[in-house]
Each structure stands twice: as structure tokens, then as C-alpha cells.
Image (cartoon, rainbow, N blue to C red; front, side, top):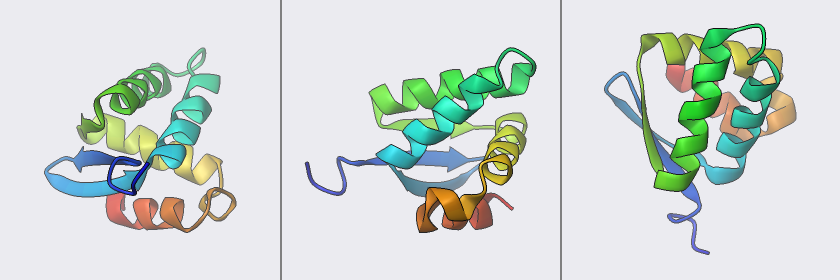
Length: 91
């Protein structure tokens, strides 16, 4: 697979960001683990799961807040430089 096909395009409330597929998969899984206690996390997990199928997703403010929470909960440095870059993009 080439790098473009391995990236997911995220529209973060009008700001386009490309994220590695593996990062989006990890974030979807992390959000899913918190889905039972947080509707925001559940919705983010579903949205990112669809993004893995479609190659793109549009996140509104609510989903962006949930994304920030997941990135901070998962410690961006553990997820690699792409996660830290994504956190900077949404901050």
C-alpha cells in the first residue's frame, strides 16, 4: 500500500488533516473502550470506524473535543509523532 492509501483524511471543523490509518484505528479502539461511559466517545469511535472504511471523515466540535480527550488520555507520545501532530492540529 502506498502512503496516500494508508492515510485517512480528517476534516476538523473545516481544517483538513491527514492521519495515518494505524493511528485512526488506535484512536477508534481507544474511544470504543470508553463508549460505555461516554456518548461522545461512542460517537467518535463510530465515526472513526467509518473513516477507516471510507478513507475520510468530518468531525464537528463535539467530536473534536472527544478526539482531544482520547489523544490526551492515550498520551500522544505513546501513539507516536503523528498523534502529537494531530493533537496540535486540533488544539
